[in-house]
Length: 193
Image 1 (cartoon, rainbow, N blue to C red):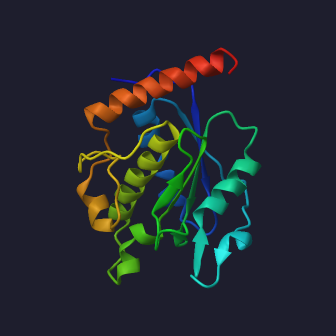
Image 2 (cartoon, one colour):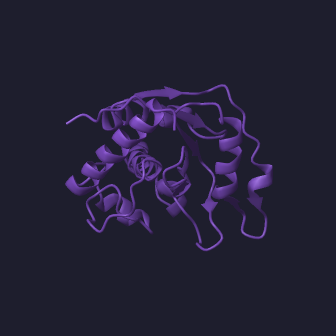
Image 3 (cartoon, rainbow, N blue to C red):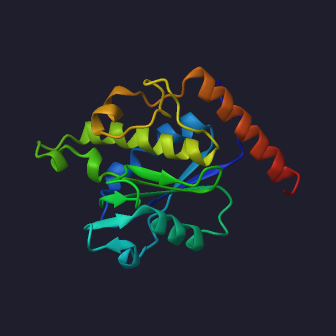
């Protein structure tokens, strides 16, 4: 059942990410969220201020702030896709982060790639994992919380094995909530809120 959605999603590949891999998100995200999905390849984002040398990782919250400032006039959701290792201060690493009921999300391919674990590259598996994490973070943008159903895309994943177990689909409960949130957002937008 399609969602009644007038929103847009702009995918922003952040150099040096694999552009071909990022482009695999356009069609499935368009179908899942029933909206126009655009792929931006013109923006250069400087990540220097987001790097923590003591951890050799990049702070995803700071990346979200940069994207928020850069795209403050964009009417829709922004999904930054990056290939560096991300963290938030309270966790060792994250696959991504999003503003709950906000407009910005970021996901990284770093820990979704088999190469990180010393295994041969598997682009198909990385693309599947990336889609799941992109849908998960965008779900947070649309107001969804973590789900206890381990097959639901909104299930929290603390390891790549957990990403592999879940699907790229919402369970019925999360899908209903997503529909409510999108409808509410649509009404707020058209009522000038």
